[in-house]
Image 1 (cartoon, helix red, strand yellow):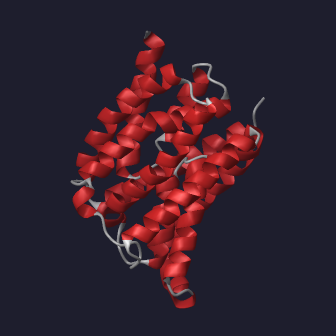
Image 2 (cartoon, rainbow, N blue to C red; image 1 turned 120 degrees about the horizontal axis):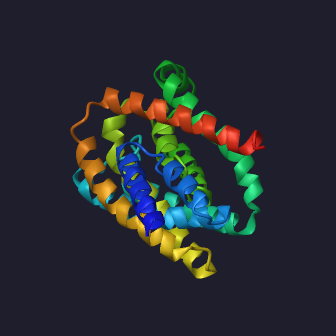
Image 3 (cartoon, rainbow, N blue to C red; image 1 turned 45 degrees about the vertical axis):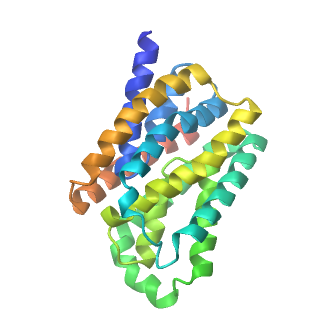
Length: 251
C-alpha cells in the first residue's frame, strides 16, 4: 500500500510537470524502476499512467489551441499521430539499452535549445522559412520520439517551435498539451495490445497524474511565461544530468 501511495504521489508531480511544460516521465519512470518494474515495462507503464493527466490538461487548455508556426492544427495533429505510431512500434522492437544511451543526448539538445533559443531564433529564422513541409516533418519526428520514449517531448516541441515562431512558452502550452496527448494515444494502444504495461503500477501513477495534470494546467494559466521558462530550464538541466549518470556512470 505504501508503495502504491508513493507511486500516486510521483504521478501527481509528473502530471503537474507535464501540464506546465513537460518532463513528467522523469519523475514517474524512476519511481517505477525503484518499485521493481523492468525498464521497458516501466517506460510503457509511465506513458499509460501519465496519459489521463495529459488528456485532462489538454481539455483545460482547449480554448487555447492554435496553429503551430502558422500551420493549421489538423495536419499537424495527423503528422503527430503517425509519428507516435512509428515510435511506439520502434520501442517494442528495440532493446531498452539503445534508448537508455541515446536519451541523455536528446535531453541535452532540448535543454540547450530552450536555453539558447532566444539567441538562436534570429539566426534560424534567417536561414529557414517555417514552411508547412518543414513543420509537418518536424512534428512527425517529434511524434516518433514521443511514441518511442516520450520523456520531455513537450519540452522538445516547445524548443523547436520557439526557434521558428515568435510565440512564447505560455502561448505554446495548450497546443503542446494536445499534440503530446495525441502521440501518447496511439502509443499506449500499441503498448496495451503488446501486453507491455504493468497495470497495477500504472493505475496508481495515473490516479495521481489526473490530479496533478488538472492542477498544473490551471496553475500554468496563471504563472508568467518567464517563470515557466526558468523552472523548465532548471528541471531539464537536472533531469539531463541524472540520465547521463544513469546511462554512463552506473556502478
